Image (cartoon, rainbow, N blue to C red; front, top):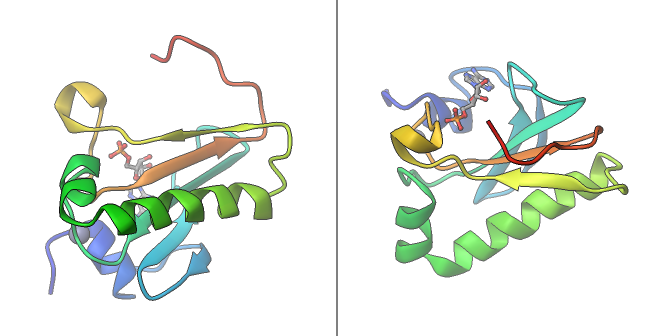
Length: 113
Ligand code: AMP
Ligand code: ZN
């Protein structure tokens, strides 16, 4: 059994509210949503962070980004949205399995916290 939370969600050991699943990408609602729409998009293969994924498999990184856009479209985020890859301690990354946050349904502020 994997120690990684998102590998366990990918493997179905931990339930999640999924909105998309392919052989290489899973999208599910964040358990603590920070916007009216807050979905996480993860590769089914484990990489620690965005740099590790995009270095090892840039085509997968591109498809994950496209999946994030498809999630936004499927959630009706026509007015815009934000895609975020928190990376490392200063980036606020708490789960070390790369994931895109897709946030929308309200106007996003800048700069981020
Ligand atoms: P980050 O802090 O960028 O690593 O994002 C990790 C995200 O995973 C946070 O927004 C958490 O709310 C979310 N999260 C943690 N546990 C779960 C879970 N079991 N199901 C869905 N989302 C989760
Ligand atoms: Zn993992």
